[in-house]
Length: 251
Ligand code: IPE
Ligand code: IPE
Ligand code: MG
Image (cartoon, rainbow, N blue to C red; front, top):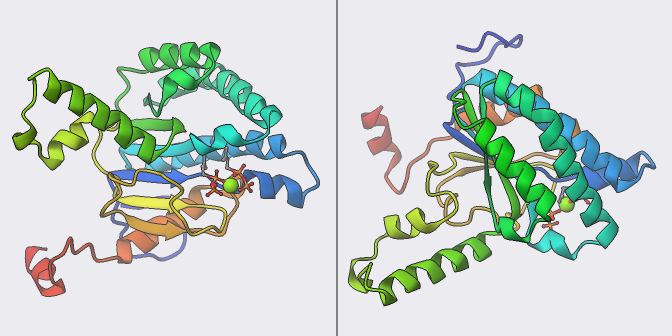
């Protein structure tokens, strides 16, 4: 089950969907006397390695927080650097995404991104649409409250136009109007960089996700760090409100 393992471990239980808050790029760079942008550049290497490892572990969906709605308030130079890194990363990585069977998707208020970034995303999403090994969902200009607000506006519009009835709304109606409508909810939510907060990420979708906080700065995250999170996940009992005894009977 876990051929890459060198240490003796129990068999890993692999979550279908892992979401990551890739935090700590700036502190990684600062620790080395480098500009923050260098941290973001090394963060891309960590994403490449983590994505590859995730696919090898058998994870089917990986959602990564790359740029939040709140990140628009960073200094303009950093925002500009992040946007041009995004465009160059999409261009340089798309051939290997295709080669490795990675389908690219994006969530967030993408209309706020510079046109070059929107176009690069559109092209890469289209070019990888038939890939089936793993889906990489990049959260860009994303915040959960903004996503829920956009979904609510859309639902209100459909109710006003008579296409939906206010009395028949369900939790599924809301899920179906979120940017993540086509994806299952995350099973495991990892935050790197040592902070223990959710920072407006997948609030609806992660209602029952297992949380794992790692002190590793994102540029240092790799296969072994992911394995550690998967081992912690394997040891958790997901009860979804039931008792432990009920869960053990189901297994
Ligand atoms: C995460 O790293 C990347 C983005 C938010 C774009 P940070 O840039 O937040 O790094 P720290 O938290 O300052 O170390
Ligand atoms: C969260 O990181 C957003 C991303 C990783 C893209 P931040 O570094 O922006 O989070 P806060 O503001 O410190 O909580
Ligand atoms: Mg941060």
